[in-house]
Each structure stands twice: as C-alpha cells, then as structure tokens.
Length: 374
Ligand code: SF4
Ligand code: SF4
Image (cartoon, rainbow, N blue to C red; front, side, top):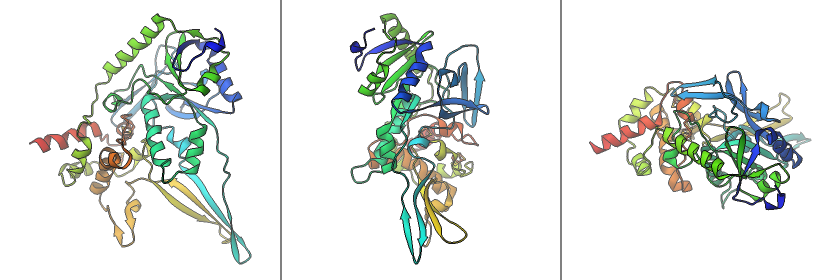
C-alpha cells in the first residue's frame, strides 16, 4: 500500500516473512534490537537480528517457584511469557560506572563515563512490562531529579509492544489494568495471528519505521480475530489481586501477625526484587586498585531484603526478615502510591515464579484482608 497512507493509531497487516525487514529498518535508524531468546532452557533478553532468533514454538509454564519452557507443536513466535529477565536491565543497568578517580601527583583527577548511551529497540514488550517502564520513568525522571543515564536511554528507546494472547497462570495484569493488551506508550504494537502480524502504529517514529514495508490495511476479519484472542486471554487470567483498598490495607496492618508467618518461609534472598521490573533499590560500591592509584565508583542493584541495605549509622532499621518483607510489600503496594501516584506492581507474576519457596503475594494479601474483617 502507499506509504503516505500510514497513520498513527491505525493497524496494518505485515506478512511474517517481512518481519526481518522491520528489524533491518530499526538497525538502519541506529537501534540495537533486543528480544527474547532461549538460553539454557530459559528465556533471556538479548540482541536479536532476525525473527528466527525469537523462541518460535515455545510456551512458558509458570507457577509459584517454578518456570518451564516447553516446545509445543505450533510455529508462533510470541506465545511465551517472559522469564526472570526484564527490560529494566537495559534502562537501569545492574552495574554502572559513576566516575573514576586517578591519582595525579598529590591530587586526583575525576573521569566521568561516556555520556553517549545506546539506542535500544525492545522487541516484544508486554503490556505489564510497558507499564513497568512507565512506572520507572516516574522514579528516574522526576521534576526535582532526573537520572541522566536512564533519561538518555529512555529518550532513545523504541518500543515494539506485544499483545498477550497466551498469558501464564501467574499473570494478574487484569487486576492492575496493565494487560493483556498493551496500553498507549508503544511505538508499534503487535498482535500475532497465523500468517501475519497485526501492527498498530503508536508514534511518528513507529510510522517512519514501517514506511515502505509491504503492509496491508487490516481487514475487519483480522481485527476481529485479534480482538477475540485478547478477550480469550483476558478470560484465561484467573489470578486476582483486589486493589480497591490495597494501599490502606498495607499501611494499616504494619503489626499484623501474618508478616511473621511469611517471614518464617521467606529466605530473604532478594530474588523477588531482582526480577521485579519496577524495583529500583541500589547501592554504590567503590573499587580501588592495589597500588592506590585508581578508584572506581559504581552504582549496583541492591535489594531491601539485604540486611546491609537498611544499615545506617548506629544500627539496622530492619534487622529481621519480617521487617524486610514488610518493607518490600508495604512500599510496593502501599506507600509507593503516595510517593509516585501509582502502585509499584504491574501484575507480571515474576516475584511469584522466581521465589525459591513460592511465596505468592496474591495469596498473602487476602489473608491481611480476611483477618481485618474478622
Ligand atoms: S511485585 Fe511481583 S508481580 Fe508485581 S511487578 Fe514486581 S515482580 Fe511483577
Ligand atoms: S519472598 Fe521469596 S524471593 Fe523474595 S526474598 Fe523471600 S524467599 Fe526470596
């Protein structure tokens, strides 16, 4: 079809065989294309250069404390639900140099890292993941403080979102209204049908990337098929979290006995915070060479489950697992709202899947509510 006719907000059909050309377009515009890949029986987000790099024919089965990739008898590319990796690692790297000091005679020279940041195109961002990015925008790009690395990477970012047609059993995005359909904020959103990808244009750069590709205006039949797939996916999501009074429930139950019951199972390993796409605790670490001529300061991911995270002059403000778990959940589902205007959870289910003892916040929260009623 004529490229002038492409419009933001409209949906077009692209034959699957043409998808590699979309990736080529992105590369021509300077983007590094990242997507899901199978690696050691799990899914990781890494550079991709072709549709064939994606986990074709895989689904992921997830439950509390368990993740399994399964090869099934179909040839679809986006039926998996992501693993432990989230896009957070690219916008807010787990290890990032802040500055290096080099000895210069009696003094020190300060060297700042390169201000240039990569230009990423994320391929296959779920609705919940897009919401998580938007939540982190509010943390790292505030009016009173903007993190320069995050802001630059975010401004450079291209988002190709995916509407989920096969959610996992641990998903509860419907409760948080973050999925299965990706909300606005994408450059292009994709729905995978049998022979084509339906692509909705969400931004001017999305429109430019698609220009010249052999797109067809989407037929009513294809749009209806996509819509039915999304409705089916929504019905498949059985896990729920009642968010109606969540912030209040959390902040009013700080001395509830159930914190201790959770603490007896929790290992304080911090897995839940590392896989969570919205968690942002960090620490600074200084490393010196043995000659005392160079010192590097880095920002590294931390976790509110680490005892050292809450160690201040004079002692630890959260010395027990009980208090650390309570901090995590009351922040994420309670005070986060006051601080940033939203909840800190998007319902992706990662913390449930990757918790080694299978602690499931959707099962724990109602216990606070039930006991409150009684
Ligand atoms: S708290 Fe759990 S379900 Fe919510 S966004 Fe974080 S990892 Fe996902
Ligand atoms: S809730 Fe689970 S994942 Fe999180 S710190 Fe406790 S044991 Fe680790």
